[in-house]
Image 1 (cartoon, one colour):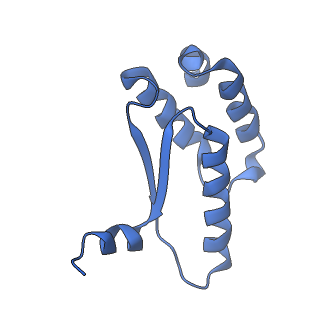
Image 2 (cartoon, rainbow, N blue to C red; image 1 turned 90 degrees about the vertical axis):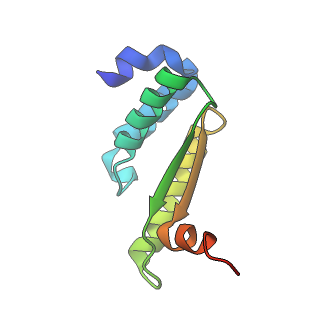
Image 3 (cartoon, one colour; image 1 turned 180 degrees about the vertical axis):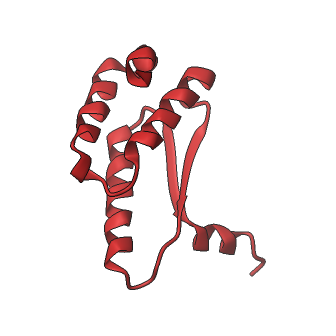
Length: 101
């Protein structure tokens, strides 16, 4: 429903590409559809490239699941392409960036 209502907000070809990519539930282990809903809502409210979608996640060092998550999040960002400003980082990096060196 959200996709059909807000479909015109992004480029139709990229929106369809994103939706098709997310239909395969096994493609992402995280809730990529929820990120897409947030992206469409923000795009509807503010317009393209007038916001930054920041995805923070907790990295468990040495975890295969964390390594896979990093790859999947990067793939999601690649699917968004240049349509929106998407940034991702770990909570560890975000908290350290505020510390004086």
